[in-house]
Image 1 (cartoon, rainbow, N blue to C red):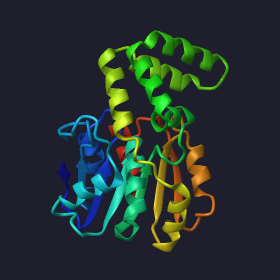
Image 2 (cartoon, rainbow, N blue to C red; image 1 turned 90 degrees about the vertical axis):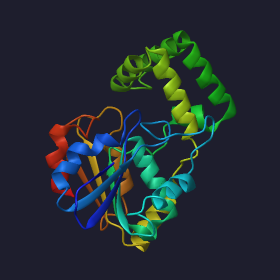
Image 3 (cartoon, one colour; image 1 turned 135 degrees about the vertical axis):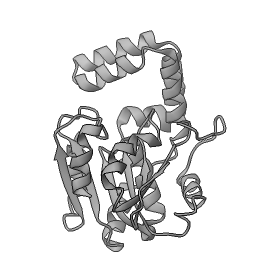
Length: 251
């Protein structure tokens, strides 16, 4: 999807289970300054993806270079939630082309131990698949983890609400497994940012229980001259229309 007529180009990656249209409200706020391009990630929206084929940073860059306005061009890059991990992975490969990196409640700055187990190990992935097919045991385990404080209430409620449906569980397993190769090297990225003089804008929701703004605070250490951290009054759904003006003011 494409909006705006501005000279600056902003490429956007959406979050899990969403589509390129998630950026529509924000795009309307900045359409005079930016040409905004948002793509459907693999297994989302209208993007067709071969079953079982893992998605890599090289695949995403190939998609980028097949968009005429982006081919061999410099552009700003934005990623929300899972899209933040995609944006970081792309930046790591082509930092010289990125004018600005905008991360909205991004996944990828710190790999969750449960995500690592489920996607980066063979046995963990098999257990993940089993639990998605037979969720009763999974729900019992997450309840125990919540009682011991190993997962917070926000994550627990989100997981149980989302995974009560079989099609949603299948979707989660398929997408997580497909996107498992997108593993940004944060130490490398933190060396590339000053080397390429890349300004980074981090935006988090103050009440986000899924991805806390403390991950942004940790990432910002050592990058104070290049990285700005802003916290707005919302939860994880930072791209909701009510937040668009606040985000636009920071761009």
